[in-house]
Amino acid sequence: MGASDPGQVRRSFGQVNGKTLFVGKKMTDKDTAATVASEAVRAIRGMNALLKDYSGTALAHLYELQETETIRLIVGAQPLIPPMPDGLLKFKTSSIKEYKKFFFASVLAAWWFTRTVAVFDKEMVEELLTTDQADLQISVSQFARFLGNPVLIPFEKPYHDDGADILGCIVGFATDDPIGFNGLNSFVFLPVFMDPETELPNFAVGLARFNTRDKKQALPLRDLIGSVAEAQYDGGIPGFSLYRKELTSKLAYLLTETPDVNRCMSVSAPAIKRPRRRPETIFPPERPRFMPLGEEFGNLIRQYREREVTSGHTIHGTVRPHIRRAHWHTFLMGAGREKRILKWLPPTFVKSAELSEG
Image (cartoon, rainbow, N blue to C red; front, side):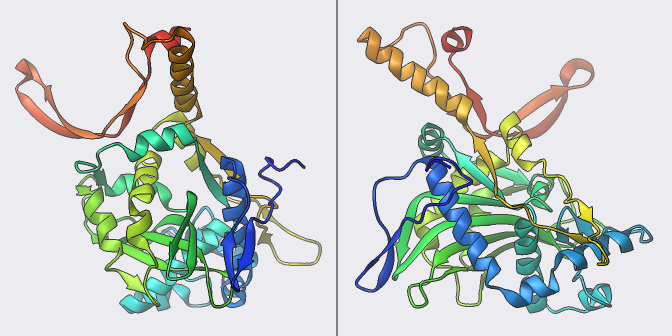
C-alpha cells in the first residue's frame, strides 16, 4: 500500500537524545491520522486487564442479557454496566472513583471495537480555529451522540509538554444511568501521548461531569471543556491548555448535523459472531475507520483561492466560503407570532453561491 493509504501506518518517530520525537517531512492528513490511530491501538493492546474484562465475549454476553432486561446494558460496543457477573449490582453501589474508572474503560473498549478516526480537511481546520467559541451552547442530547460512538481526533501536529508528545484525543460520552440520561453524565477525554520514560503510547483521562435531568438544557461548551483540566484522574492531563483550542474547534464540528458528521457518527453495533466450539464474541476491526470531515467545504475554499490567483484579483459578487458560528436565535411562533422560542443553532457552513453553481 502507498504511504497515503490510511491502512498502512508508517512510523514517524525517531530518537533524539534518548527521547521519542516526530521526525521527517510534514505528513499528510491521512498519514497523521494513521500514525495517531496506530499509537492508540498499540496503547490499548498493552492493557491486558482491560482487554480481558472488556473482551468481545463479555460484550456479546451483555447483548444476550439485554434481550431479557428492561434497561439498556450496552450501546454499540460501549457497555453501560461493567460486563462481569453482578456488574449491575456493583455499578449501583460504586463510588465516584469507581465510576471514573468505569467511564474510562467503557469508552476505551467502545473505541477498540469500532475505531472511528476523524480526518479533518486542513482548510476546514484553519477556518474552525478562527471561529469564535465564546457563545457555543451545547445540550446533553447532543453530547449523547458519542455514547457508543467514541471518536479519535488526531491533532494536526504533536503538542509537546514536559517531554511527552501528545498526538490526539479520543472523545466519548458516559452515563451512570443505564435507563436514560437522567443521572451523572460525563464527556470523556482520553488524550493519547508518547510517554517520555517508557517511550510507549499511553492515555491520560479527563472527565467533564455534569448532572442535569433536562436533555435540552444548554451548557457552555467553553466552560465544559475548561472543567476537564480540573477533573483530573491518575496523574492529570498533560498539556491540556496547549491543544484545548484545536480540540474544542474539532469537537464543535462533530456536534453539528452536517452529512459528513452524521456518517462519522453512524456506527453500527459490531457483529456478534460464534467461532467454532467457542462462545459468541465481538471482534475488533482489522483497520481503523477513517472518516473524512470538511472535504466539501475545503474544496470550495481551495477553488475560491485558485480563482483569485488565476483572475489576479478578489472575486466580486460572491461570498467567500466561511463558517458562521453557532448562535442563539429567537423564533416567533404561534398565532400572531407572539410566542418566543429560544433555540440554539449549531455552526453552519456558508458556501460561495458562485462556486456551488460552478
